[in-house]
Picture 1 (cartoon, rainbow, N blue to C red):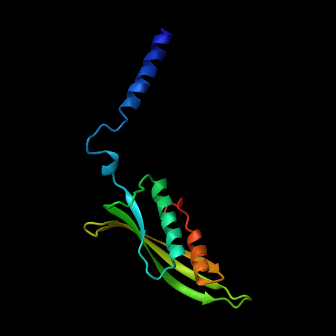
Picture 2 (cartoon, rainbow, N blue to C red):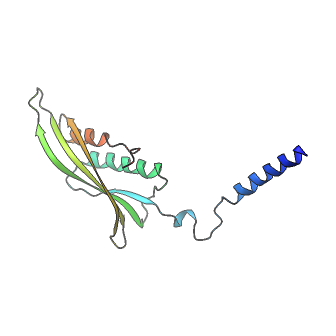
Picture 3 (cartoon, rainbow, N blue to C red):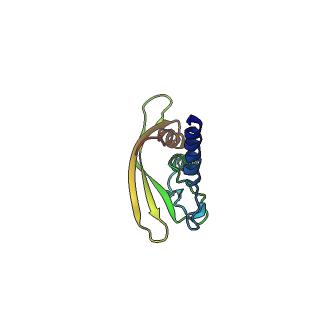
Length: 145
């Protein structure tokens, strides 16, 4: 009798797992919502843009929304605003930047913005590019924002 209940419960487990698969025609992997990260800022250094794109890709991947970039319907766009730029009085002089990174979830066909967040970061480096990289390195993709 115990064997029968055990076999019945194992059979029910396999049946419930079997229905969890995707059998819908229109809900295949190419039709699901995905976000393609795009950094849209002409003033930022190329290395900083690449680093921010990688951080945004990590963010999308951690949430199961990463896209491939081939004609995306939705994208996550980012712009970088320089809040302040200073040259420190130390020897050697260092560049200190305060940046605001704005991220938007955008429908590429209509231009509608569905979500927006801003992240304030600070970075210091021997030149402006290194200060940008230091600031962007502090963006945490695992943070709830």
